[in-house]
Amino acid sequence: MTDGTEIEFTEMTERVKAALAGAASATGATMLPTETAEEIIGIVYERNFMRQLFPAMPMSRRIMKVPKLTGSVSFHQQTLSATESGTAADESRHTTGEIELELKTMIANIPIGNYLIAYGVEGLLAVLRDDIASQLASNEQSLLLNGDTETGNSYADNINGAYHATNNPAFGVNATNNDYLLLFDGLRAASLKSSRGGATESVGGTFALSNIRSAINKLGVYSDNRDELGLIVPRNLEVQLLGLTELQTVDKYGAGATILSGELGRIYGIRVFSVGVLATNLHTTGKYETGGSTVQNTTTAILLNIRSPIIGNPTIAERRFSIGFHDEPTKDRFVLIPKQDIAFAVRYDEAVCVFTGIATV
Image 1: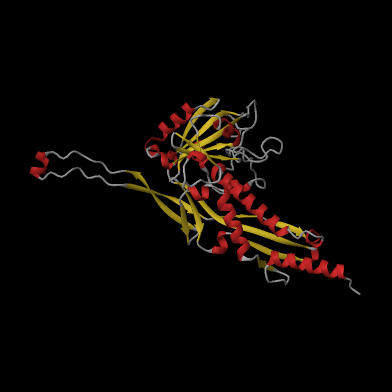
Image 2: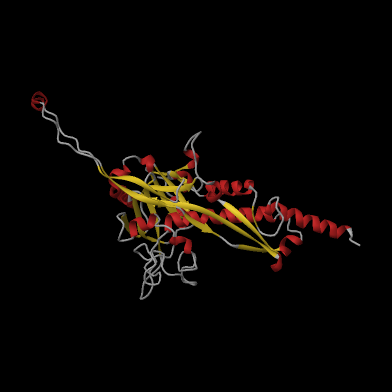
């Protein structure tokens, strides 16, 4: 005979699993409810300010070519005599190149024992949703900033360095650790990789406003419009900038101003953003280096024209973000498989300047 406690226990278990799995309950692969996936997408876009800051390209194909200018037109004087004689100005044409956007997949494999939901964990759906969204937003930020496709010298040539469990576990890469950072070249790579053309600003100690002025100069024409510039700094530099009177904090923006997640304020009219995914144990080169007597006690920051990076989003909703559900009764568990496709590229490397050798505070 089944008592009331067992009935409640069974109903609760089925209720939680139904919420996680959607309407289907049969063994096999199903999808979580669309509403759950949309909630996670909303959280990711809210927490990753770069999703709102950088231009986005809808992609109906896996690979798309995006044009960029490599040379501009020339203007000449037009004298009265040239006009009277019908002499035309010298011709000049735009020269163009292209970059490639390729959709690639970030995926997770999350087995969950049935006993977790069987013994009263009714809030499991909310916990899983928030954790997946938070981790995905963090990984996206790190990928767009720290991504590097280099695998040479057993990953030691990667700007993040080979994975070292005791030295650089959060950012170092190899075939199995933080390998999502191998998907694309991010903003740091645009300046720090020898094959790219971005600028660097060597700080060599305490960060100063003069370093920002120097970086603005190095960006050249890409710094003409301050509204198109963004300064991205690590958390430990954030606390230093908050003590500067030159920082116009967000509370002084005025009514109606749009404030993105992580936005600190403005310096010289440049919006400043703080992130927790920039390493603070880098070499003065701005990379993580191994071997010899290399000192790994500095951090980095990035000044860029926000119109240069471009994010590619698939037009197919399921590939934009989805969570698969697979029931494994023989293992007394089910598996959640969240995944998303994303593309990223930097159109103009010279529109990115990376600060190196910033003293960690």
